[in-house]
Length: 305
Length: 315
View 1: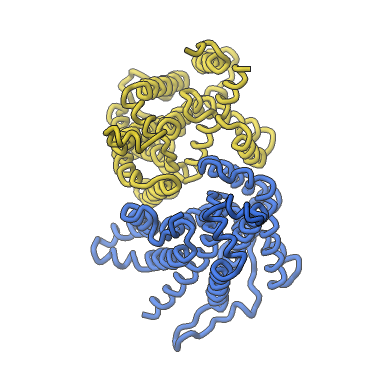
View 2: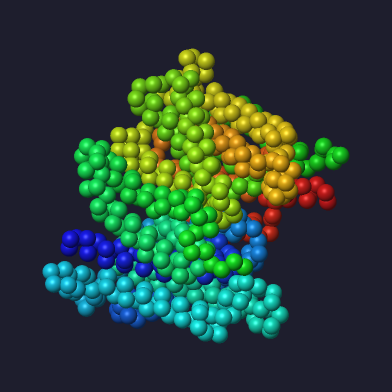
């Protein structure tokens, strides 16, 4: 029972982390209709920036803030130099161009930081275990991920649904020309949205950095997970991304934790231990396939344009 | 009727001639490396051509074609591992397995369109990747070494470099001939018609998805053949070769050369893999140049190399 609580928290934490990544992706994808495979590279850059700046400044908080700013600027620069010329192009063009960026970023990181991974040590005040219910303690850092991600989710919701900028973003999503004709600088608006998406990816990367090793290609696997989430949730729907992210995080984590035992009840133990790892890695792809077959537009599609 | 002699046709003729005479050059100059390199190129060109059939002519952006390379390869590898070395069994199994996989995946994926289609084909390929990683009997993550190449009863010796090269080249030319026959047949016309206007074709009375599915299965089967060749070439299959970035590379090869042109994928593959080879001799960080180059091609050279040649020819 305690294991279940702990694994559920792990699932929630992983899901919320995925949400940060997927929220940035769905902002760019759903609003600007731009497929950005390099989103995972921005996640990776966030982690590398964090590891570097924390080491330089000797301060965890300061380093993290610097890394966040750096990823934001990188995203804006990327949009300004290359990607803004690809809006309105075929999705395939966008897939290929940003695939090129993945190649570029992986080698750039290898050139700058070397092929070996980095690690980002946690400050002492984040390593203490916290007792959440009697008998169950949970690492403070993972709790803080949950808190930060929830705060960002709430903030994002407020900005997009309740502010003027959010209104413009949503209006720009449904009719780009109209909002331009109203005298709004749509180019600037899109640059800012892309920057925000990049910063969210960077935030996900730097928060994950102390848990995993910071390494080349770390964004590629998780990028596909983020795509799975927005496809399950429905493209362009932040609410859908939020629910799907938590769903996927839970299923992935709980599947890895409990599937071997469940299979052992049905199969011989050797067959179960062979099948379980592959099956648990496949679980979310299976889920996505089922969702798409039943509801080709995703579970919570954004309002029709 | 367009003139048949133009720059792009001349280039295609030169490429075909060059590929055919390559072993002669290799024997005369004693440069064995170039033969090895081009065997790989020819195999990937076949895979790219199969992707072009559905991408360029059918308008289906499959982001999971690496799965067929893996399935074709594993069919050869697993049978060899279990002691069945005959190519007459291995290769038909490889083709059949890829065709079956394509049939199931296609039937499910074709319910979606656009980005959703790109993503669902990707998801299914990732599933194949994880299944391969989970097959602990066949090496799991580490992959499976193939100790003996497919045995064709003395007809062709696959361990002979030149014979193997010509086998691969024969498969490539055969594949392209097949694709050419398909796109010029009534069936191919319907598929291309569906790409340009699905509703109209539906209204005329064609069952669009059935045509699409058949095309999808043919493409997957040809790519499975490339997988069987690739496994014999490297004497090794592993899940790493099925990872999604490999599917991305195949897409790049197609677009590099020119999507929807018969020889575009061949030229794109030659350009991509030669460039990769040249750049990696020049610097360890070849992708640092390749990545932005790709971006520039997408931005400025729509229609790929074949498109550029065509424009050049028109003056």
